[in-house]
Length: 347
Image (tube, rainbow, N blue to C red; front, side, top):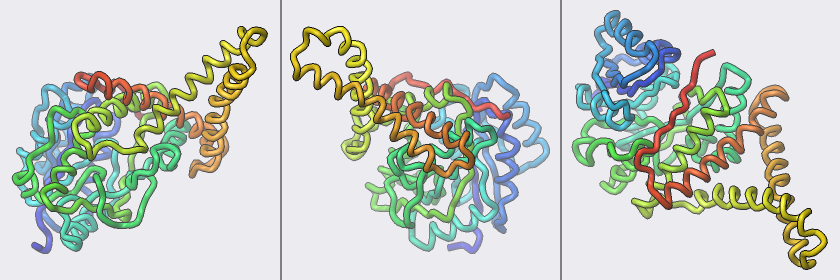
């Protein structure tokens, strides 16, 4: 290993004027002695993102701008990687804040364990009560079923990596991000890396600050798109299917059945057979049981204060149920054309 190999940070950017400068500052302030460059792939933003990016680039020659006319994440990542030059490639995000030792620690881990991709913990946080509640739901195992990068796990080999710290040569060997996958492209790339015999590694010491959606409307949009693209992964790759992906659709079916039973049961109370009445009365309890579990999970989350805990409880159905709808849609119809229209706005 070169003592301090140069680092190319790559970031696709779209409608991020409120977060971009802060993210860029945290990247360029990394406590790392090696050479750095930051490539921003600029999509067709509707806010002042591109103007902010141009100002930042004019002030610092290490910031390189490339156009990403379609605005899609995998295309932007590939454009940025190809425009970059240094031996280590680090994917970064406009909603993320890197701790000052992130680069140093990540590269040390990359070579220490002989990995080709290293990722850490998505440390969700919030500025507003709703965003803090959603962040607490991200951290909860009840929220996402326990992926290491959300709720934490011991250091070790991983199926995928959040963001990613790569050796440049891995892209030449296994290829770049799959531009057909508008979401979940990181998982698919990690699959190719693992199939090539290389290691993808999770290091919980790499904690990246991340600001999730700050409204339930945008969270619902994001969750539905995520579920749809996860189903596309499951359609294409046997390795992309997990039993935990079946839980939200089963939950959705149960909740929907419960609401239908609540409507039907009073109408059939006098005429329905005893067995059917029992089934309907049991089904009616499913939404209440789920709401109770969500409430308990919210109250036991890492949110601080009762208000934020209650908002975390509200975030769980905004994650689970739209994700399930998207997953069913994706399994039946595929994910082609599915976009996430929700965007965070800074308060």
